[in-house]
Length: 418
Image (cartoon, rainbow, N blue to C red; front, top):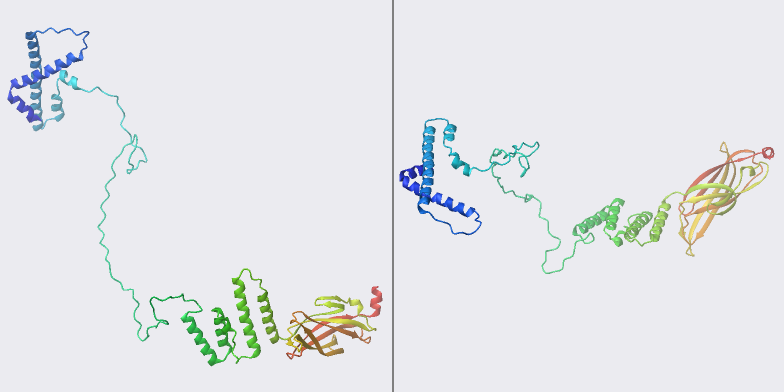
């Protein structure tokens, strides 16, 4: 910029005077338009006077420019000599007559914004708060590029083991069904192996594994085909279990099933199990009257008095009795019973035996009881006694017994109690 001013000074005062005259003429023309005339009179012109005034203004502007250029040269020389730049800068100020024309009016003063606590360096905008750019983070070390390696996922070949052959060859353009438990070649092979094992072993364990496996895979018809090598009662129990399992599976899969058939299968299995168990005399009572199973009138203790004949009914509940089919198609139970009265020291004082007690029913009984009349002789002395009831199942050849304690009181005791 200073070089431009230097060239301007070399051109000469004539060029500067011409430029100043042009500036003065523009200023005069602007002043005339700025004034609002009261009317539109025709202005009077004085050519000599106007030229003298313009020449004076041009001379004043030229003088100011010359003075400004002198100060600029002084500023450059002072800066080159190492003087205070602020002093030289102050010396280059324009005259008040020119600087005042272009100085902006001072505006209101505002306090510098203060920093706001908690303002993050990452906030995009903030009001009345200082802001600065966040420090540039140190560049992270360059990570090495990952190395891709080829890994084989094939299973190693087994030496000495032949490859498995498919049960069915692969076909095209043919219908293919899903492999279920019933049709699975693996299950079929396993069942075949169990069948061979059962035929060779001829024992219960092999038969048990085979039949339950067939039941689990819905081969119910094959499952009840029990081997004749087993005993009759074992075959009956195992077949009853298979039938019960089949019915339970159907019951659990059908919400509308009543379960009646499943209960029949339970009773059937129970009868087969009872055939292997011993008879059990589960309850004994001395009664006046017996109506049916579990319904009777028991005699009070004061009715058993010494010195007289005592009539009573021995009620006995018996379980696990075997039944067979009679000629008339009914279920028959055949028993032998024996009643015996013992003293406290184990001496037998009275006994009675029924060699054959037969019961016929259209259905196998699950609530079997025996009612027998017993007559105690008047020779029994007052004291404690034990009634022994023995029941023998004539069909199974098994027997069992149970005891019932009672007492015979003296007549004087009865009279004193009354």
